[in-house]
Length: 100
Ligand SMILES: [Zn+2]
Image 1 (cartoon, rainbow, N blue to C red):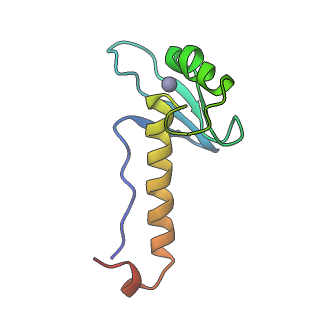
Image 2 (cartoon, protein in one colour):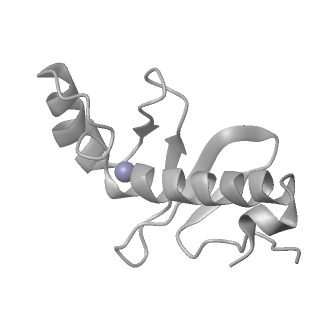
């Protein structure tokens, strides 16, 4: 069976920029935020206010948990990236190892 990663409702990959995404704001009418998953040594960065003020501060204080020290946009982009990567890896494995 061939599975294709669906387009996420919340993040949009930027063509030609492997780890960068436009992340939809939850506030209607607000432009999307730019997420870079590989920046900050793989912890990711985002242009939203929550990242800039709260999450960046947590990191400066020593927080290294990538879930806690990330805004929801980074978390959504990371989940989308991981989902695509798992589908890609499963496609390269023998079917009997990855079927339901
Ligand atoms: Zn954000």
